[in-house]
Image (tube, rainbow, N blue to C red):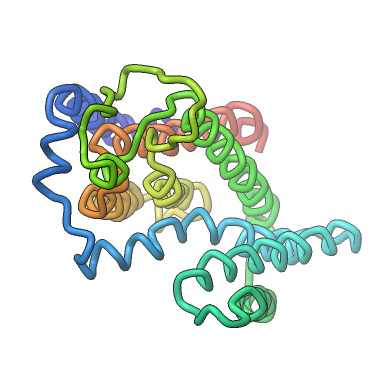
Length: 274
């Protein structure tokens, strides 16, 4: 993947490093300038920004269900689909359903989504020559998702950085710390941004060229679409006062880096033998 996306990777890290350097000087000032918790677009992405990460299990599980021939493996794929969909429903439902019976409505919605994925998957024809690769990418995507969540949550607890909105609630900026200072476990979880990292799971689109020559010709688009989406989600997190520039920059870096490393190892371990 490093060779295929050499220019895109170079651009990403230059931009991300520039953001971290700038954030060392203007993190707090930028949030003061942008803060607007009533912004409709920012609220929307607060509620939906992490969807790329939440859709991995429903989609990957469906792929496993239809690309495995063993009944036990197919069952595992169905469980991943329905379990991931139930969690997806919970994620969406906590923002969009009314308080009464919210959990029940959310899970029912999620399971309905998972069942729909399994039904639609039956009508999607996948050439036999692509089945093994598609299954491998589905498994790798699930692994990437869990690694991303683990890294982000671990860093959040370790850094213990106070969110901008909590500074406002306290009526003082005295608790603000720069992104490069590790505060230790204290209950604060601003750095890095989980929403941005979840949005950054959209970088899995960069795997599309493995499956088709058509997508190989569109590989730049497979980078640009996730970049734009993740950047929009990142910007709205500043507007909501949930994160600083450095938080969202690092959230994007974590997801992008995990995707690049994972697929680079995949190329070396699997593709060279196919």
